[in-house]
Image 1 (tube, rainbow over the protein chains, first blue to last red):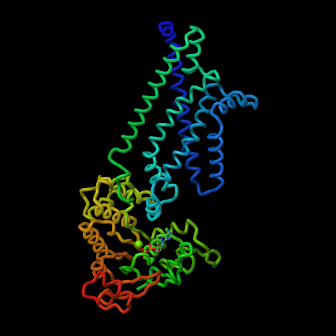
Image 2 (cartoon, rainbow over the protein chains, first blue to last red):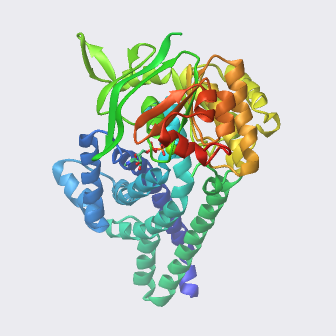
Length: 222
Length: 258
Ligand SMILES: Nc1ncnc2c1ncn2[C@@H]1O[C@H](COP(=O)(O)OP(=O)(O)O)[C@@H](O)[C@H]1O
Ligand SMILES: [Mg+2]
């Protein structure tokens, strides 16, 4: 194991890259989740159709293929993305598709009576979403988003295939240089596990934060 | 008295079910109406149509002389646009059987937010009015409570205050005490009576509380099967209903009526 630990600088580097990749593609995924998820609820069929095509395309094709496409095919079309950017975009677009379903379902789960109350108070459609439906949908989204962000952490491992020097990539380097297989892999598994545990407790904390003092499910009106 | 609401030959279907059958109704400005009748007779539907939550299939409804579900384009009536409906909704407010408060906002914010968003008043103005209305409904000490921390009767009083904050000329109340435990009914009804006696708001109230209807209303409408079977002053309807269907219905509520 000692042979492995002398590689600690690149292990830390790899861990930081994995964290960076997860956070950055998480932000991309979050923006896409809301944009596509709300577009799927639009009153205009063209908007709904575009969002649905996006969803089915990115959910229906593999994340690895999407990443290869962005890294290897886009340059042929004259678009050059640095590896890290291609990884962020591919992971973010892919997870965003799944996230959009979470957003759509959570917004739809808010009861019809809430829409009617807002209408009776003469809210515009935008105000209805902004001030009534989305605030009530967010606590519903958080557990599912928590699962997705762990999926995302695991998904970033495929970024090593396009030369991004994340944790998985570094474990391969150590493997080649030391001819050890078991040790580096156990080490990165432990690190992935620690990272996902941190994400799990972050989700738990957010769940508590959003339910504090305003438990929506116990309220009247349903 | 000028009519603030007119229904002319209004029919409403849910699928093949005819829920309102050529309804004609005139409501004077400031009038307090109680709508009574068996379940399924179309009382809620009338209020929901006025609140623009349901459309109509035929006939014409006017509110303050303007068509509700239609608008005039080049002298012909066409189905109302969302912009027209938004103008009309300013005149009307509704309180629901299930309160329908916003669960993520405190009682006070429930009353403030619609004022700020819809009536475009300042935060301070909205807050002051919300606080006054909380006083009016007897909940000055519950301002920062969330709906789930309040009893049903308290929630319903907040909902009434929220509707009042929008200054509607017409208020619709759909069985606002039916979801409440019996001991909480009076606190809500007394708020309705207070509004009736202290404002000139036109009030349409669907209720099964006959003693309340008798005290509160200028006129009682008895509905059955999507039609007004009988209407008149509370005294007449409750002591000497003319129609057998009215009498049959009221017998369940009023002892001594045969
Ligand atoms: N959204 C709906 N879809 C289908 N039928 C409905 C709907 N709303 C009400 N109805 C039917 O319309 C009739 C009148 O209902 P409603 O106006 O709620 O009566 P009331 O308030 O007098 O009990 C009932 O038969 C009811 O089942
Ligand atoms: Mg009803």
